[in-house]
Length: 124
Image (cartoon, rainbow, N blue to C red):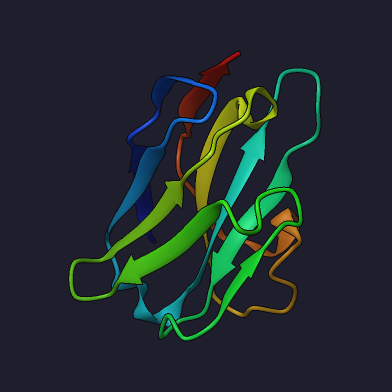
């Protein structure tokens, strides 16, 4: 079992930045492909970013490419999402997730463990 806890969400003006963190306990994250997803009110949960086990590969949704950066620190068992140039449409509940088998990093149903989410609100 892996327990994931997100933090760092909040209210920010458009154009601002936030850094989300995901802390894991229970097992080392080195075995897991890690992802960030988000869900806005009335919408489906969607892929935001993912990172390979060693941090050498990073993958992004087109909507955040060039603005968000995913990273991980396996020694600290954490994953982060640096979000810059935030837009009102980035407003959502952001989730951290862990995927053991990495069959499809873009598909939320492939992920095995989830955090409870952290709210990001971007005002215009």
